[in-house]
Image 1 (spheres, rainbow, N blue to C red):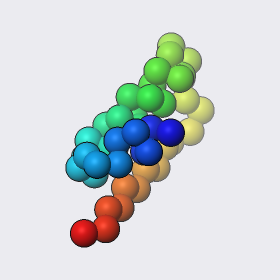
Image 2 (cartoon, helix red, strand yellow):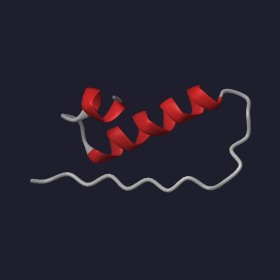
Image 3 (cartoon, rainbow, N blue to C red):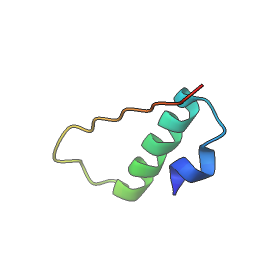
Length: 43
């Protein structure tokens, strides 16, 4: 949903939106593992 909402933005802005959404979802809970995120945009 986040990517659909921000598809027109730059890859960096999409990345930040996804990270912000994950942090909001986790709130004060620590993540038990690393998170890998790859944003690709076609020109």
